[in-house]
Length: 150
Image 1 (tube, rainbow, N blue to C red):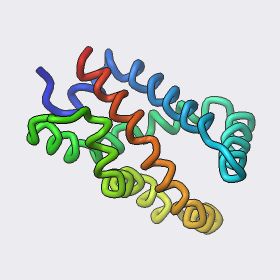
Image 2: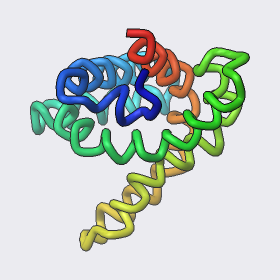
Image 3: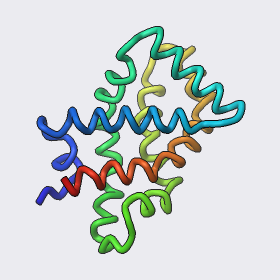
């Protein structure tokens, strides 16, 4: 049995399925947003997809290995704890830590960009991003559990 998320999710035969599931997760998260901030998220998402079709899939593929690396310590802890609860509950229960770890991937990229406009825009949306990542953790846990069980 595979022990790490890398072994479970990133094998050549599994990766395309995981990427498709991640894209679906992102689409569902964006669709679930409501209110003024939800409208802004939906509009931005639609605009990005219209300006550069395929960018969402490309971005997920580029970032997936780093995200899996950031999730691995939490997954290892979850497994070591005896898994007395579903993974989605475990991740949600450590929401602040997990979201900071995941956003560390994009934090690093923003910090290393030479484009001041991108840095500034990222810093502006980062706090809202953290909230949105925390809200997505239950779906992410279910996505991982689906592939662990397969």
